[in-house]
Length: 127
Image (cartoon, rainbow, N blue to C red; front, side):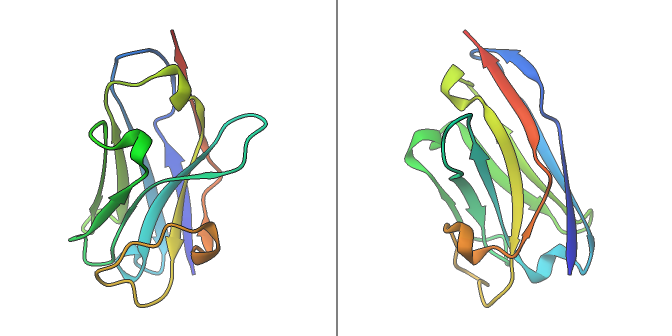
């Protein structure tokens, strides 16, 4: 098992950058593919980005391509989401998640692929 704790959420203005972190404990996070999801009020949870177990493959939802970057530091057992050029529509609770399985080079993007979830961190972008 792995426990996940997100941090870094904040209230910011449109156009600025923010970096979210997800600290993993328990079984090493390098055993999992990792992902970020978000959920805005009244909407379903949405896939944002994923990174393979190896760290060599990443995948993004179209709406954040070119603005967000997912990365992982295996030495720190931490997952990151660098968010640049933030927009009001990025406002949501952001969750990190871990996917067990043979995702060495692939990047799962369905919530059902992920077995472990953090509690979420709020990102609010004002216009």
